[in-house]
Image (tube, rainbow, N blue to C red; front, top):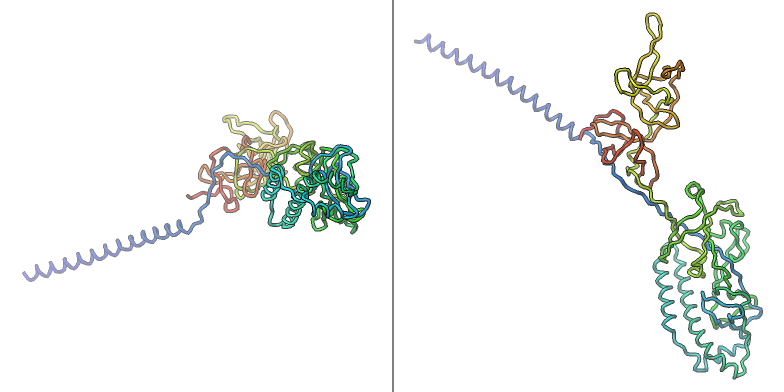
Amino acid sequence: MAKKKQSEVIDLEKRKKHSQRHMTVGSMIFFLIFLYMAFYVYAYVTRDKVQFYEVSEGSIVEDREYTGIILREESVYRTENAGYINYYIREGKRASVGASVYSLDESGRVEQFLQESEAGTAKLTDEDLNALKKQLTSFSLSYDDGNFSQVEDAKYSLEAAMMEYVSFSVMEEAAEAMSQAGINFHQIRADKAGVVSYVVDQYTGADGETHSYSDLTPSALTAAAFDRSGYSRTQAKSGDLVEQNAPVYKNITSDKWSLVFPMGEKELADYGGKKQLHVTFPGYDLELTGAFTVVTGADGNTYGQLDFAKYMVQFESERFLTFEVSADTTTGLKIPKTSVTQKQFFLIPEDYLTKGGDSSSDGFMKETYSEQDGSISILFVPTTLYDLKDGYYYIDVSGKSGITAGDYLVKPGSTERFQVGQTASLDGVYNINKGYTVFRQVEILSSNDEYYLINKGTSYGLSVYDHIVLDASTVSEGTIIYQ
């Protein structure tokens, strides 16, 4: 019995040791699997994930804003004598030949008579109030924080307009009474028919001298004419005392007017070949199409000139005018700028393209040389084509296609040969529809700050709903994409 018990104890100890060895091996295997999974999860979490963009149809309209100066047929009239001035025609109204524009009172008795008589009190008509409201609305819509001088100009214009409206009605009522009272004053009449404006402006030229805009022509333009710091304007009001030879009004004799603005290289490239431009005027609810020409100023700079035949009266008191050029709406495929990159390609004449004898694959016939005897044979090399432009196919320069620099290609049905070597670059993106990056060329039509608009019908290009890499700088061709 003692031997049997001893044998059982030995077997039990052996089983315990065997079980312990199995547990140790199993634990090690489980631990290794755990480490592998932890590493895989860590690598997946920390790996840079490539962001993609789904190609969609779209359009880009880029309206560019400019500020130009208005040129028109206008003449400035000055006083022959000093005196108190009173106007008879309202700002922006037409005067016929011989119509009274203003009167000049050298004695000052007209102003005194108006103050002492009941004629000195007058009310604004509904038409006058509507005109003032329209002027205020236009100012509020076109106001720019960066050009605070507009506030002073608007205040001055409103004040002058209100005084003129009152003065016109007063003078009409008091003219006969003053004549009976023996008050003499000079009436100045229009020598030409036209629109009357009491805003007379000028600028300081590069020579330091003062120049009138009324004498300015497009060919005489210089950058100084656009400099607001050297700009000044006067606008006399009824009742003001004016000096001899002071500018008191201008007569605009034509409805034709021009809007001239500085042009840079981009504008010259975009507008240089156009005969007309469609423009809008913020704050005026107005769109016009003007005849367009490019002119060279006296300073050698390039300027754009827009000519119009109507709506001159809308801007008769303005010299600087902000406008937007409406660009043609372009449609196509819309992609982010960050997705576009460039890649080098070999250029192969299109006449060298052929198809394989036993397949429909596109490719080229390449000369190969035997290592044993140097004999020449012709081998068909299937090749991926990236673009056809100006008679040349674009193929990969990496050599993966089997064609490298220095290889000779044979023209089908001819003995002509072409040595591979000439290269050129293409704009393109990385398509990831297949799970890895494939370069696809793009033809850019237009752009804004964030997007390119590309041609929709480009061969070897993109289609709607294709997925492309959002940032092309993060990958290279053939990169496997993990999502």
